[in-house]
Length: 257
Image (cartoon, rainbow, N blue to C red):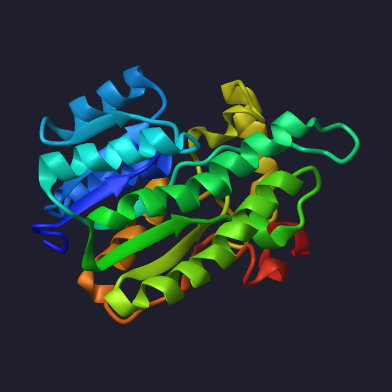
C-alpha cells in the first residue's frame, strides 16, 4: 500500500474530488481526516469511509477553525504526512454585474484559505511531507465571467511554487493538481438542477479533446501519486488532469470537421 502508516488531512473531503481522494487514501493504508462545512455530508462520508476517519466541521476561510482542526488531527493521529488543500467554491463574477462581497468570498475561500490551511498545518507537518494544492484549468482558460475564480486558481498555481521554495529545506514537497471539467457538486451554483448540470457538461465537453468530463477518481489518482513516495523527487510541479483541454485544445470536438 502506497500510504501505509501515513496521516493525511483533506479539506473539502465530504464530496467530489475530496471524497474520492479520501476513499483512495484509506484504501492505500492512510489515516485520514477530512474537513467540510456541512455536518450531514461529513457524517455520510464517515459512514462510507469507516469509523477510523476523523471528520471536522471547518470552513477553509475560517483561520481559527482550521488551526483548531489541525490540532484535533494531531491529537488523534500525531503529525501529518500529507495535506490536500482541496476545498474551494465556484462563482460567476461577470464584469459590471459583480458585488465586492461575491468576489471576495471566492478569493477568501480558494486562495487565502489555501495559504492559511498550509500555515495552520505547518507546526504538525513531518519533514518530508507532501502538500498538494487543488488548482483549475480556469487559471489559464480566460473563461468569461470567471475573473475571481480564475484569479484564485492562478494564485494557487503561483503560490505553490513559493511554498515549495520555503519548505524545501525540510524536504516538504508542494505540488499542484489541476483538474479540468470534472463531475462534482461544484457545478451546483451554476447549474442547480440535474438537467442544467447535463447541459453544462455537454457544452463544456465540446472543448475537451478526449470528449468527456473527468471523474473525481481520476483526479484522486493524481493526488495519490503526488502524496506518495513515488513522487519523492517531484517539487513545485503541476499535474493537469483535463482531458487535453489546455494542452491540445485544437483536438477538441468543437474543432473537428
